[in-house]
Image (cartoon, rainbow, N blue to C red; front, side):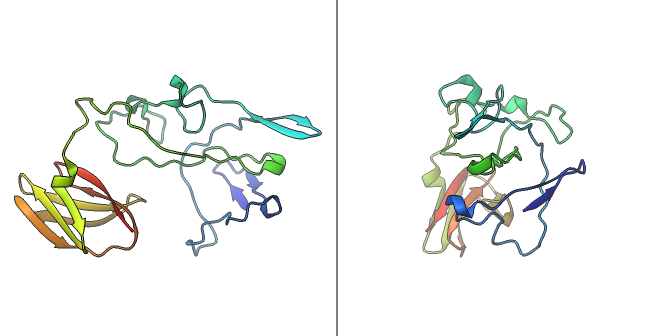
Length: 203
């Protein structure tokens, strides 16, 4: 797969099917022949330490990135007040609704293939912080048999997002219990009101 960055530098990600990587290297749901990503590319951090046998070593960044430092070290964490905008300027956030994890390194490591980010889970390190609302979510939002039931303490806006962060539905609901027909394909969704939020898994 050929790639080109905004600095005019081009490169190639080689298909590694002969090494057992049988998965697609390009999103199968994309019909276009080109795909554009925005974000910050990190410096290459893998070093070839021997040729026979070929071995590579990844050198960790100081802090602030996923799949970087061991999970039990401070370098594996990041704080909301480290947030910056696309210009690298500090921004103040009071909450995070979505976290998008992508591979910020574009480096090929011989027979190992391209570097990639491997994630097992994400943990909230401050579950009792005053800035994080705590609710009995099961009593607030319920989905069954194609119907979404929301119990709200006041009139509010109900929003439904998919995993890509795309808003699928936005509707005003009244105080008390509201039931809405909601037929969605299998997947994971985020249901939000001003009072609460819940991850919804449809199998």
